[in-house]
Image 1 (spheres, rainbow, N blue to C red):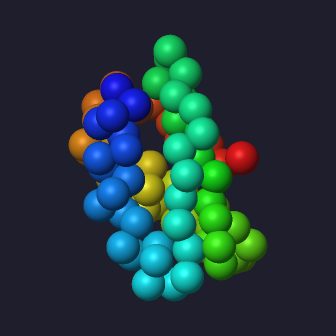
Image 2: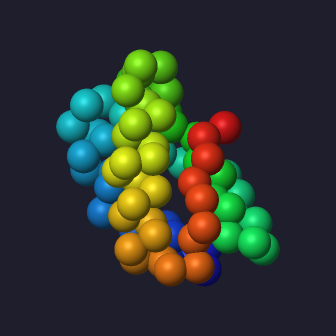
Length: 73
């Protein structure tokens, strides 16, 4: 599942990079929780929680149905 998640994150990265940010996959739990670290300007952006939930989480759930939730560290 980790490999599928990385592949899906590769689709998100160009959008984050356009704003000077990136995302790092930290952990995938057995129960489908994906832990990410937003980096660069995304790490301190006030909109990062919306980016995480409305953008990254939505795309990951579409691409990898096993994903139940995405949280930022």
